[in-house]
Amino acid sequence: MMRLERRLALAALAAALVATSTSPARAQATPAKPATSAAAPAPSRIQLVLNASFWPTKTSFSDSRTLTEYAEQTTIRTSYEAGSGFGPDVALQVAWKT
Image 1 (cartoon, rainbow, N blue to C red):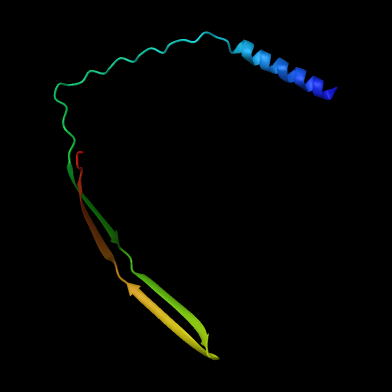
Image 2: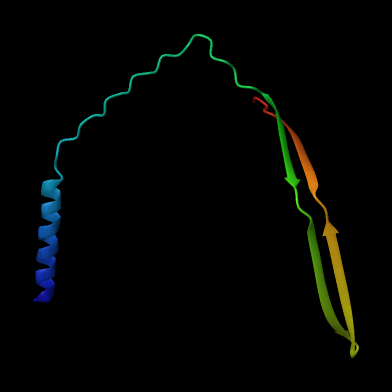
């Protein structure tokens, strides 16, 4: 009896959805074309890109590792200090028209 009630409920729900969504279709209006100037500028084919970065503070790195090889322990200690830095970046971009 439950299956029959579910089927009837689903059928009624589907019929209600179809009945409410049967509005006539309307065509969309075509948008007006924007006015264009007679001489549009051509896109640039070559572009020079300049970037730069600057690190104003000093940075230091250090690490210590202890390794065991052949029953002996070895310790490796490293440290590195870097000052402030400047990093330029120059690129030339060319667009090939095919």
